[in-house]
Length: 387
Image (cartoon, rainbow, N blue to C red; front, side, top):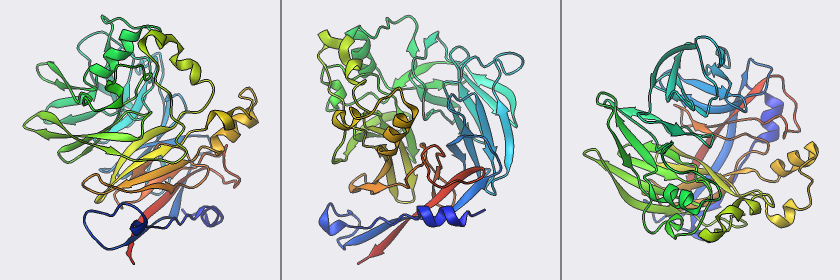
């Protein structure tokens, strides 16, 4: 269902010419791209949810509440197929959902104590247990769970046996040294750490960079790894079950409000700076045909942030309004084409790419000046033209 008034308000056309920046390795011709809002889906639901994931097999969208305790499965026509509340008691037995995503048509939930629990048609099914006691101290905006050939691939969760402390420099340094992901044989339950950061990564410089949140996307034999707080992602290639580092894809963003790393002796002070600004974040990595998209926000600098009172709701909303989402576009060889295609104002992250090659994002009603009944999902196309 198309909401015409909203669509007119949010149609976005961003042009750029690669003759003014890096050229695509596939062509020496100047190329013009446009990111256009082409349509929208009105979801038959009156509460507030945000888009979380997409299942290409069923052509369904997964929407979640802020703390992941509620989710919707929505068809391409906007009809709600499943409306589920994860309960702590009873058959669900989900105390806290640390992240949700789709996995082959099922909804999979990371829990603090049961590993990854699968739901199908709203009913709890089996789960993939992590074969050691672990700690979950961050929510995962993108879960990063995959199953391939009898093996599960997921973030390398922190063992309870290892010391953890936000004032302890060794805790952070081990986070950066350990493999970021883990692969588990679902028959033997054996695990192996994969995708360690390369020595060239800024996170490997011996200083404290906070807690990275892995963002992982598979693209054929290539696996793309973002670390949330830095304007780059790492590419690994899988060959015969081994994941070898291939390259780092960088993008230079004007007005990037980045954090400042601190020396190990000052580990306990790292998060003090995070109270004075909104840090820039790379929140998703998506594949759209021959393009790779990095979805990010530039953050809010300390100078701009100081003008707001975080205790006031209206100021918190304004901070979100001045921190919109952007897309950096890379070629299939991970060369930067353009760094700053702006998404429509007032949308939530994450975003997804559907079977039609459309970039999808959900409207954040708190940030929008246009009122609609129900939830709105925007459809966007990346259009290429030769000049």
